Length: 251
Image 1 (cartoon, helix red, strand yellow):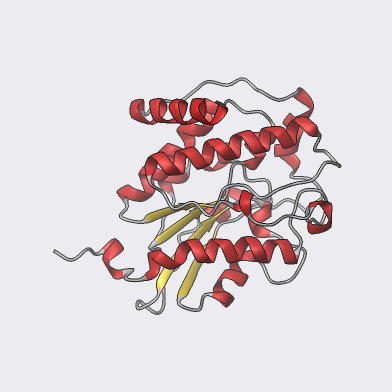
Image 2: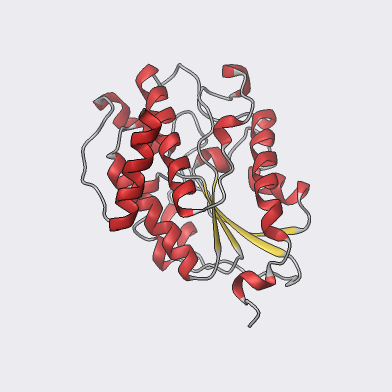
């Protein structure tokens, strides 16, 4: 019944291109999680600068190019090989031209300036959103922000891809309510992907073994992160058959 309501809600909002107001479904204590991103390396004070930096053009135009937007889950896995580097390693037919993942970057932080960033890649991956879920941000606003990002990527002639959310464990700053919010918002993101026909990696369905798979209740360790990136790579595979036609379709 909840899934039906979610799909109806998403379809209605997408049809109207509207956005929601503020408000919160979670408790007030969770509102601090999105600001600090818990037990991560020091926050990057140049967050806006890093995101606004124009992407470098691909050196090999025969490769499918990828740009990544994400928070610390996409930026950090407890090892020296970042998730973006892992994707590049396991899919040499892709070229990751820019990794815009920033610690603590919520969907609400990303969406307003997103239309003004310079992009060059064929495929644009969006991982942000779980921070907004933990804090119980208005689901209407989350839907609107995802929709506007998807629309902008498509207007540029690129292919948007949504990852969905990885799992977290009870402990640290996350309580039972925050985990329930994560699950609900993830189901909404999946409904958005279905309704907009956007490739969805469905990270929530990747095998997860609880706190054992995490660095600090929130961030995937290298093993779990590699499984997530493996699923993302499989989602990208059907998109890489002819990337030239994405930005430069044949007449």
